[in-house]
Image 1 (cartoon, rainbow, N blue to C red):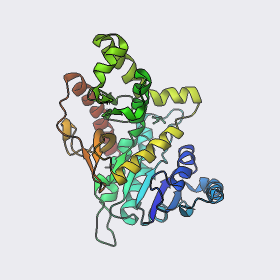
Image 2: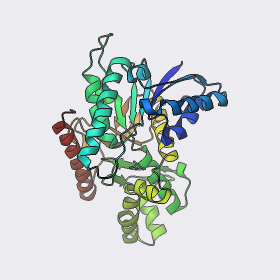
Image 3: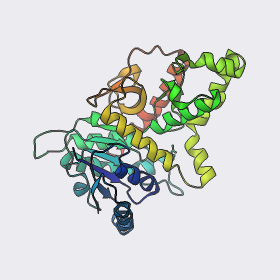
Length: 341
Ligand code: LMR
């Protein structure tokens, strides 16, 4: 089966870390891909260089790569869309300015996806504010009249919190000196912002409860709780800012890697493993219906994502999740006030 994948912000650094792995089979293995690269008109020239390099890799799995500044052309018959391009925050911009700039981008991209992509397209929003950008794009996609009479369901729009999930995995693995693949059931809840809730209360390390393993490593349960509260949660939640400060640029390779993990698992299933995805809430765990919030999810072999149900959250996690979800609700309300939803 040949897949058509649209990538926005395709001349940027996240895309530069992503496109070559995608073309080489990081998501679809040996299945051939067609890449449709979208950029704003002033960056399309730079895309020509990316196209040359993709051609020069001579990947057997890359059937074709094209570049355009027309969203309908980029999204035509897309099986998946990685929405990386977003308006960056510049000097003097406040949150409303950022939402206004991105609302325009994601309204246009959502509408074009709604008109032109396959009805069962998988959309992964990477550009920030990712959760609310996904909500805006989903809204506009689902309101389009399509030639085939179908309608793209808002559940086809997700936002990337796999980056935070992978950061949490990496940090925990380092702390307990265990391989990453021995760790299961780490979760990220809420917004992809510093209010997010990295959660390892239900995590297992080699099948043992993470809190018990941490207690041994930290010299007691109280020390383990302090490490989670004072180091693990704030470091995962603020990792993006720490990278910007250290590198002078935001995360690119790790964001690209996480986006590929997200798309691969959403396409082929997680075989029961839990991953973090920001998905449309149906009211689960008190998250208001319609918000795009991160939850622990599994993906069936047929590619249907499901929020893990029946988790017993303690008061601390409930309060933290409530605060992050309140931020998402405020972003949605601002987007609504600006006329984007
Ligand atoms: C990240 O988590 O690394 C990015 O979302 C940070 C940013 O603001 O670009």
